[in-house]
Amino acid sequence: MGMVDGLALEVVNGRPPRVTHILVGGVTLARRLSPPIRWLVLWFARRYGVRRGEPYRIPWSAVRDVGVNITVDLDARDTPALYWEDRVGRFVRRLP
Amino acid sequence: MIATASQAGALFGFRHLWVIALGTLCTIFLVEMSGRFAAVSKHTIRGAMRERLGASFFVLTLILSLLVNFLVIASEIGGLSLALQLVSGIPSRWWAAPVGLVVWALLWKGTFSFLERGIALLGLVTVAFVVGACATHPPLGGVMRGFLPGGPGTGGEPARYWFIAVSILGAIISPYLFYFYSSGGVEDQWDESYLGVNRVVASVGMSFGSVVAMAVLVASAMVLLPRGIAVDRFEEAVPVLTVPLGRWGFYLFAASLGIACLGATLEASLSTAYELAQGFGWRWGESLAPRDASRFALSYTIVIAGAAVPTLLGLDPLKLTILSMALTALILPPVIVPFVILMNDERYLGRHRNGLVSNVVVLAIIALAFVLAVVSIPLQILGG
Image (tube, rainbow over all chains, first blue to last red; front, side, top):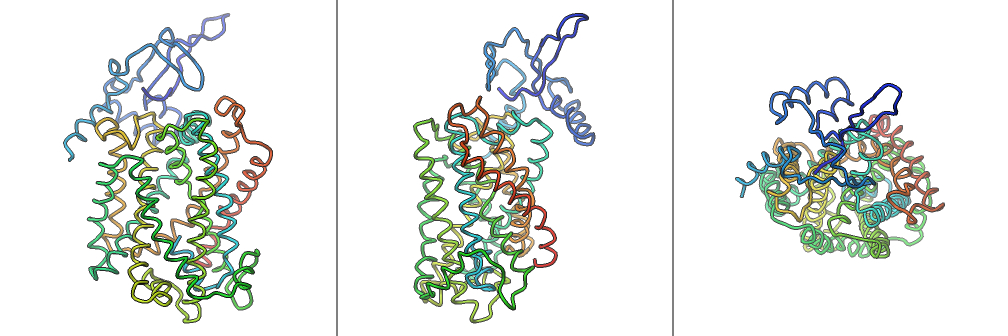
């Protein structure tokens, strides 16, 4: 399905932070990089991305196992995680 | 490696043999670790670098690695085109596009095991260099003395000598090799039962390449040095085999050069796609159909197309090779430092983590990598 690019935390006063979502997508990755790369990726994602610059969020409730690999109870084909794989795939299929 | 080894022999006789031996020893250890990591963790070194060391470090090393890989692929396509020029008489620039197309078609249609076995089998032709070196009857004492670390000797240019030494180490300790090897382990579905096989493949495979490189150096020292040929162009290295083996030597030189370059082009192109795909979490696998790993397949397609351009424009492949080897030496620290972290991570390797000896060796290689990185550019200016 891809790499975990970030985590969304819920912070409520007086309680420890709680992980609510896993974030997947180049937009989250780009936020940790230098400004020119971040700007380029965000511009591209807003212009052409399936979620217009928003990362795909997997709810923590879908997580089944956490180790070196993380297993989630989702079918990747039902998510936008493979959007670019499919789009590039349409072009690749035209090649011999 | 043919380029740097022939230059070394032509200019300094047997005096760089110890450098090849040192580089080979380092590579054997690092390749063994790459394979062990893949077999035990089912993860690749590149993917784990992203997971364990974070996005910023990953992107920085990716940019450096892509630049060096591009130069390596460009110089190897140039070398392969030149091999075809030697045989056909048609200028190498005209071969760049067909060569790029053939390399791409092999990756597009081939599977990992087909390419792996094909490269290994065809690579046996490079034994011609060993035969050629033996046929020149080199003095055993002189060859043995070449394995003792030393400098250029009296009258030799120190900057040139050490620049070639750095280039040789850059050619042998190639980052793409480790990423390719660990990806291959995952592609071939290695598990812990392959640890013995991994040790043998790492030792024997790397030693084979090393023996061939040493043979090129010895033959160059015996043939080119007395004739004052400095190997400023690939073509000038042809006598390395034509003098000891006659007409057959010419064809064997062209075949060896072509096949060595083809193998390196395939490996470096695949490695580039592996690095991108594993770092960004794309589907990857040379054994998958391109439509099932489309971004992976498109990556090597773009890289090969771009890397054919320098040869198409008539750039000298030898200059590209020397530049790429020096840059490889420059980027070695960020490539090798992660080994000491990853190879000691219990979550990935469990009881197969590095022991004391492996850790001491990898720390020594890191120290060497830092020295190479510091001296590579000054030496490129002074002795390149």
